[in-house]
Figure 1 (cartoon, rainbow, N blue to C red):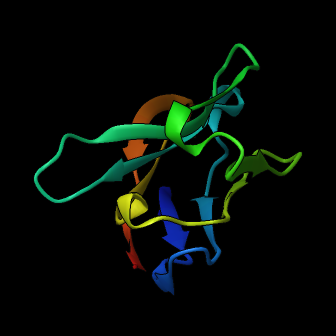
Figure 2 (cartoon, rainbow, N blue to C red; figure 1 turned 180 degrees about the vertical axis):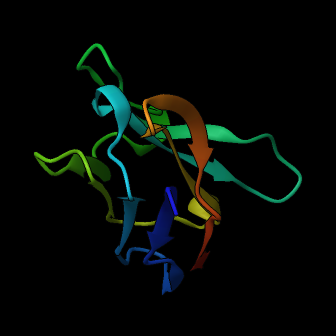
Length: 119
């Protein structure tokens, strides 16, 4: 089945680290574009980091210097390395990208992985 699959969430104390992974199962990230979003309780979904199809790498202001997005050369896996985590980083993290199946491109979201940072 062509889908995005995430892993790596969990509970960590403030100042700790987590690594999230997103795999494009059965496909690749079309154009190399892949992003991570965060959905905190009672808040709108917000972009954390993204590779765009234009080749740029963008980060939300409040994560710069603490969070790094990388992807492998096959464009099948993306990793979000999160260091010096803060309680405000708590939320469900969702991977987003465009996948291809039978020459049809479609938008895809992962199921989400919970990240909880305790103070």
